Image (cartoon, rainbow, N blue to C red):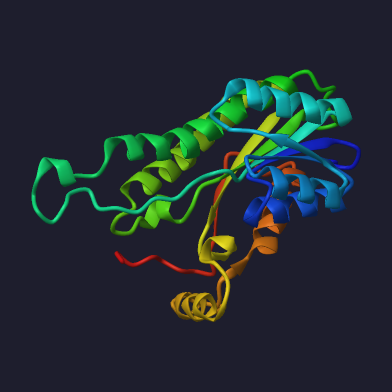
Length: 258
């Protein structure tokens, strides 16, 4: 699938995986809409790559539509990469055995709402816009890449909410691809492992922590780079025979219980 002279939306595009993907797409001649809630950082990334910043809560339909329309105003929308999400870690029950110390249900709902429902919200609305594109030689009208996590398959202690949300993204991949096949829109999913993003912080303590994490990776023994994720995302967008796939990018790691 040709990307030049098209537009794309990257949710969570102001940092980490999203920022790297926005940069990679811009390098391919794509007008990228950086959709995020970090106004300062999002605007800076968009300006640097010649794109557009759109303030966007992925659970807010009106804001998602605004991002889609901003992309379509620049060029036909052919690509979406969903990187927006949050993490959370807490055990299902507390040590004291009291109901009050069980996993907060509202926090569980929040993680599902942003990570899973937010991803689907962007998919359903962006695919609707893509359905109006003139098809290419393969009868394609666009492609979507969603971001899950190896936690979808190797969820650790305390990751019930996060793993549920990411497992849901893996689970929707095949039926989403089947739903969108009649309009020529492909859908794939990436399950990143331990990727070096701002979530780990900065400074000597952070670097020491990341080194310890990297030692547990099969090979190469380091954290992944956001650019490596972005490279795979671009491949899934451009390779017209990639559809309904969920692919781990993790250097062979299998997460232990904790």
